[in-house]
Length: 175
Image (cartoon, rainbow, N blue to C red; front, side):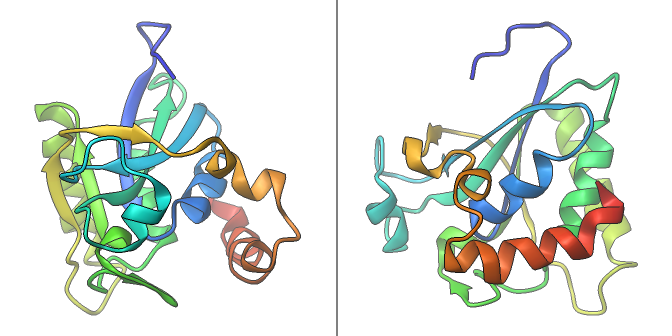
């Protein structure tokens, strides 16, 4: 998605399977679009299969396109730290591998500062140390079309029904 309005900003976040975080961020008021993809690896235009090996260096991420007059970057980060476990290295639930790492990929210096502050604030939510990496976004590749709006298009798929739907239900007050 190209940023068509000067008011639209982009956040790039990874917290496990992109299907899960995409489904949650899509529900937030002020979010214009969420695009699942792969970021900061060393293979050009990776496929899902290449990323799943854990050898491409990419993280599964979402790019959240949002209107900062409706929802702040800080609010997105607050939500991010509540919707996944930022204390587990390369794992979210049963999903394991470097592609599932907790990461905030900033687009500019103000996002970097906000991310570092949000990570510090999130220590109040978690008893174990937070290992979320904060790095500049180098490259983003949009995931294959079938990954976009995955939960919305496949709510009865076993992973969606067992993992995403309960998470959305539990987090409903956040959205």
